[in-house]
Image 1 (tube, helix red, strand yellow):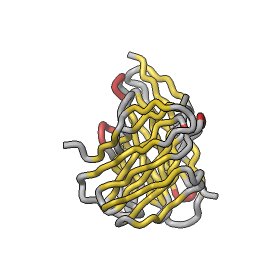
Image 2 (spheres, chains in turn blue, yellow):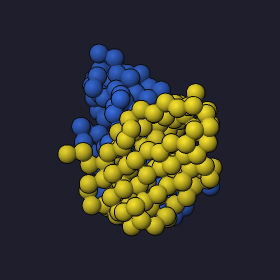
Image 3 (cartoon, helix red, strand yellow):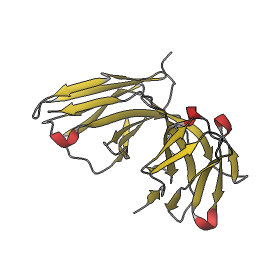
Image 4 (cartoon, one colour):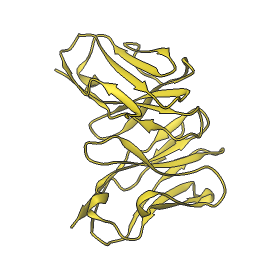
Length: 111
Length: 113
């Protein structure tokens, strides 16, 4: 069965630190990849997405992610986090009609 | 203007009851979804409808029944509620099935006592 793994369950960083959240998936075919964010008490919002082309995609609020096909990975990065980035981050993979979400990474940014 | 709305936002009920959660989207999207998010924040798709037709029906108890009266609405009816049904239920919509971005509703927090 297809799956999406997010290895970091809970990350705590100080403001201005760099962030990298891992995401790996298990599916051999063509995939579309997403990162969603869920701020405290809010619904999920799209950060960025990859369908094709340049494997380095840029999203909102300074986030970017790199698709490495050989590693089945789509890691999320941000050079300098802010307190307002405190949220749950979800990686998601679409394999056609099926959508799979990772278990999420809780990010806490300390001022 | 709320793109994807759900009612109610909170729902507290007793075991054995039947309840419904409503979802509406005003984005003109063809596809709608129901997700369940458990206490550990794990998000799992339950159902997906495309143009009022069921296209994904994950392994969920048959006590859960989705109903799509039209393209803009996808309601979730739950019979004989159990303690394990306590979760946050999210509705989402997208322009189509496949690689389109999903827009999520605010969620319905269901607590079964």
